[in-house]
Image (cartoon, rainbow, N blue to C red; front, side):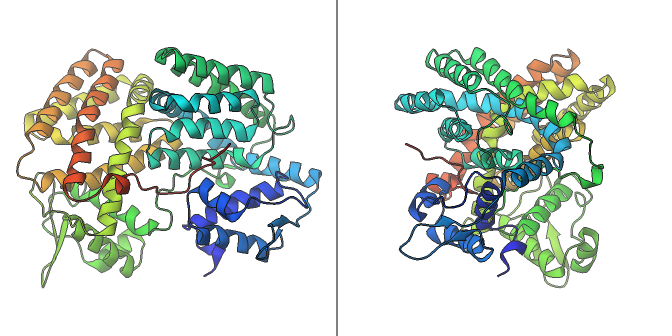
Length: 490
């Protein structure tokens, strides 16, 4: 296997983590890497996954690794080269940083506040120790511990992807790479702990948002002093969920689900031929076949000899998903995990997007919900809200993140469409559609966010209970889609 060409392997994430730490001088010549067992615990992966990453580093001449001896850094990097690499790293991501800073400001204050609400009281002494000596690693440990209390791997996956993109784990604390004083971090982290212990949740969210803004402001200001690169050379942020799984196949499955339920295949009895779809989506015939096979297992499609691939569209009872299929079980677990991200972030996101769009866009959204109500298809209203956010947000990273969540929600529809009775879900969707129409007409954008959160809080336990009834246990629903981020610590 060519390690560097297999971009979907978890071992490649670990490789990149240590590669960047080595070239940015976080690990220096002669220092020892943690033992394999420690790395397995910290990353939440098997010894083989860690060894695959380390073997690649050894083959490229960065480390010395032999059985029975500590893994030692043999790469020698100069401070001058490290500084230049650091500048290049950030400049290539400049536009994405500006965007991602605003996106993270909408998502993580409420996610972290939810984590603080659930964290066990015996974790506060550990968090307090981290706040007393806040280096970069301590800050990462601090917030990882808080988010871990949500017991939601998809949240941790998002935190990992954004943090790695920012380059934060690669850099040691110094004025040359993080112009934030230790006293500043110490004061703000201790303030967060005090607010959490007092259960002052609204001030806590405000403090988290301020910390997010103030921490990254020096980065942004420093980048603004450098000549920008052409847009085509910039590296955008992209949230990768399917590590060690067929990213292309599952991404195409999400796209086909959209076309089946809301797009060009909605009124079609059958899909086009495999050849036509391969040309349309610029993929191989084997990818099309694998994708159709997965959606067949989900109950959305059914190959019929001599006719083609039958489509079960919106509002039409579909076949029951094959809950023995690993692909179905995995993506339905992601679907349930994605509820919590929406539940925690829908209010600030709703207000941000609705306040930034022209009145005409709000009017069109209102008409869409009214059409759903008249036509009896209020089950589509949550999807239409998600699509509105994706289309109208000015933040590319938020468009990417909510786009992934929208695709995961499409995977969950067959859970409802394959059942005979869905009165509780239908009643919730009807109430939501009526409520959001009133809020939109009154320009009550905060009320829109509350309406979305109320619906999600009702639907979340129903979706989780459905998976439990069909034999997907809690530990599988919570199975991590990616490695952890420095979750352990003393």
